Length: 211
Image 1 (cartoon, rainbow, N blue to C red):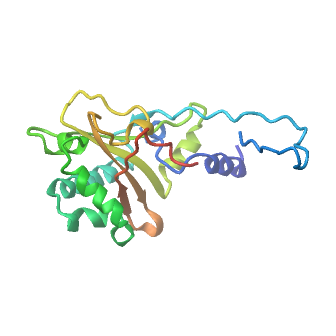
Image 2: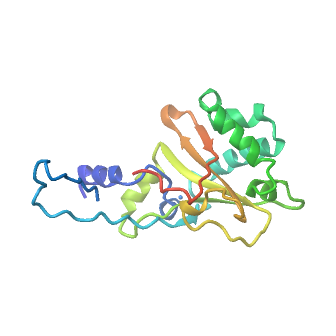
Image 3: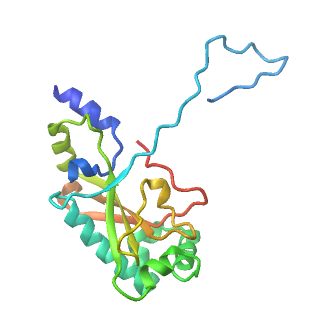
């Protein structure tokens, strides 16, 4: 494969961690007086299936980076000290409404965080990335491994044998989930490791990260 072909395939992939490599109709209504509608056939867009999640590989260069970030994050969240967790979640860019939402997640009896992070006993966690396509070649996998940015989910549970989220849709921290999750984006640009976490929530599950 040429360099241009590899770049094109990588550019088309989501900017997120690939664990098997690291092992992460618009319809226009027209009135009777409007201009005639197009006679070209309109195909209904079919939503792409959600990408499955899988644990990161122990031998990936990204795994210890995400493990260290996850350890810092969970300690800050368990402290319930906003001065500790807010900088990891955006600092001055973290909106007041999001600060309030996260404070609530850490004390709400219906929140999965209360069970996952504050139950007695050992706390289990998984770091999950998005599965790479089977068609991805060795050189492309190596390029992802050597990339400057990656994204993964860290999830915590008081139950050692799971279950864990199968897709990002399931990592929404909705009441009743048996685990709590945060998304971590990691960057190695300019040789400086930096990361930011996002504690997200949604009534109908989370969407896949944008490509």
